[in-house]
Length: 323
Image (cartoon, rainbow, N blue to C red; front, side, top):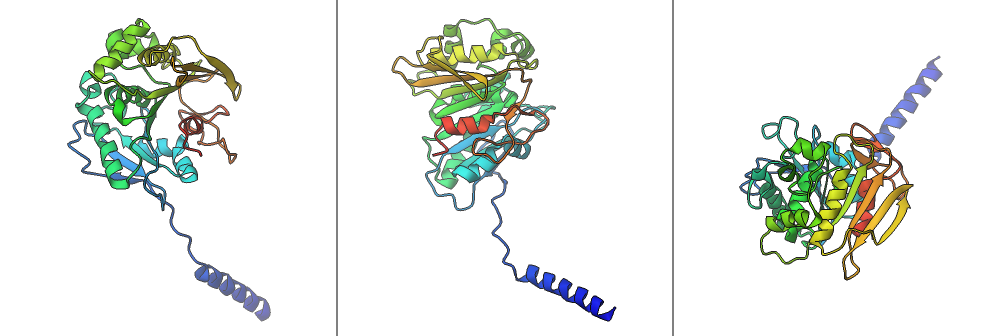
């Protein structure tokens, strides 16, 4: 009995010493809040994720959460934070406050928050400026994306601050000026707005008077069974941004990705300016594909829908972040 107890005690002490003597791995990067990033007229909060040891001159992704979400949950659930570690770029994650919107939606439909130099749009632009100044990231490789209301605000930033963004990725979102064109954000979401491509394009051009380009390119992900933001909004986004780029509304190429229809629209010079992914049968949410394979990312949950395609990875590939 004494030998058994002694052996047990010795084993426990050995295990304890092993733990104590094993070097602790360096802590991974963490999401940090940044304050004092400007006048912040939209009263937003700014978070960012910078992988440990990230050199200057690397790309940036601005990732905008949807309603009822927050910066941390969206960064992780969408897959953007793990991708930042894998491929070496930083992520800016703005966060809405309930004092601005009870459902924590970015106010993509309010003129005072979607006009250059005003409200939330100005706050988001200030976040980009502060992040570039702090990290030395590449100002020519800043990209913006978001889900639902965050997708609507992605359109806002592309229109109101086109000089700051190389590309945008709208997930279940809305074209710029949709609420004003439809007369209501709900009509915009559930029915759509009646506008010609030129009228859609004029709304973008009016957001940044006198701007001669280059304009950001656009990628859209939309569930065909989305009853919160109807699929017509993807069509309207395509019409809006092809017109801005001087392209027609007929796809120049098409294929399937993970079984889903994918279309490519090119400018007269042959440059891809708009891409669309129609997620057949998907409802309202961010497409994710949990797993450890190279093309997989994201975590399934509320508004993070496992459809065997990760939108974040597709965007990262399109934007040249994976090379």
